[in-house]
Image 1 (tube, rainbow over the protein chains, first blue to last red):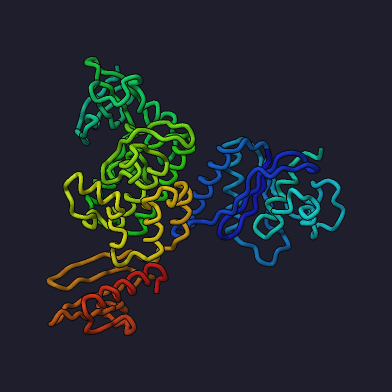
Image 2 (image 1 turned 90 degrees about the vertical axis):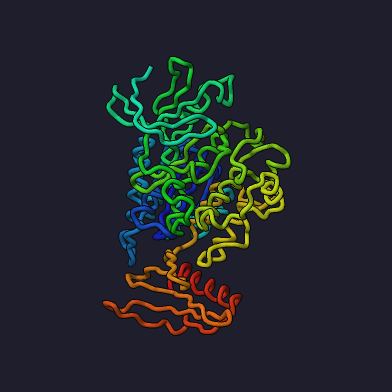
Length: 152
Length: 341
């Protein structure tokens, strides 16, 4: 079972997949928003708590974060913070080194995708089991998870 | 047999007594619950409570450290000692500032979510069982009535009368949804204070009011509590269990989505009631001045410098009747809480 993350300045989304890149099953997905009343450090603590719960409920063997593109015009510091908490926590709880990938790296790790990296979301359109994840909330978390699945 | 020196009695109840003890072997203080043999709820398993706590190890659940029997057969359960005590000890029935009440509720939701996931129901959620740590987080304690139930099943009725869900009184069965109800009553008590509970002492009357959905009064909230907060808390306390939040997680997510911009404090001087808060480092006061013939003025002022105050013209209203004054004060105070301006 693999998990893919995509953080947002106000929370994060995760998608848990099972199977292989050619035969994928969606196990769980959610888009979580940070609590409105908490200070920023308290929000990061909240991310850790949420993550602990996710990892407790699913037997995750591999993880990946779709991280901020180096070419991005707006680089959100909050996203970097949330990514860092996810990386640390997955390592502490599961002993897994979570990967961080940008679009070009996702393309490299997804088999049979030959189009330019900027069209990577087409992977979700082509696979009927993943088409429900082809929206702004889950797209990149799903791609991160697919890149972690074994090829066959 | 543990080497404990009893230092201070922390509390007592039907279950027995809780003492602050000094553990001579490890040189630390612990809170130890002593339960006489006659008061053990499940005689088939003396160690049910410590075993439940052991199975439920979570950041927001009080930690069990030791358990055993004394020479006279009394059961003891040693737990971590939290010197601040319970929410009830700290606030003594007074309303808890809204933002802190939310923090307490969020922490407790995490604990209940975890217990429910592991198929335990607490059956005794109330402010006296919410313990505060030095860091300001809250831990759920007293699992003496907690029991494990298979998914979707129910258990026998136990709990604090005023926190018992209507279906528990009607059918005699507790479930995860009855924990949600107790959580709602706890939330109501934290936000409004115990003074807002109907003044009924008769057991039968309380029972009737609970069954009718009138205990606590769902329409009676502090004036600064925004409508959406009232709706969320009332949803926990629906008489029909299937209309309540499905889980503590759903309730937590609802309260996490609400931004509280300020906490109001009430001051009473002679007949003038003043609500005070701090918004963006400046003090805001909303005062209610009674006038002749049951008329009231509302003055809102903002501190602008040392000893200087300026009226917030839009929030100053004069010569209102009692009903209009109540309505207007509710609008003003809750607007500052939910919008900050």
